[in-house]
Length: 91
Image (cartoon, rainbow, N blue to C red; front, side):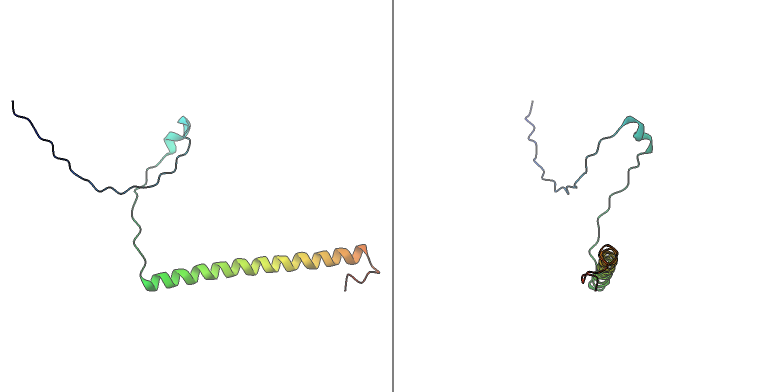
């Protein structure tokens, strides 16, 4: 009987990160398997637009935070004016 020599073949694999989560038997009916696709890199024009959108969102968040901070400061001044009517703090 002749010997069979096995060839070793290298396969290149892409590894995907998978998030592990507990699964209850009741949730198996609701599970969906979605197709995993690769994300294509953006063109320079698309990347610029994306960057500007993110910058706009960040500025809007900062603006809201500053307005909220100013409202809190004004409310604190009003509280101090009621607590200490003769004080110089409420000016």
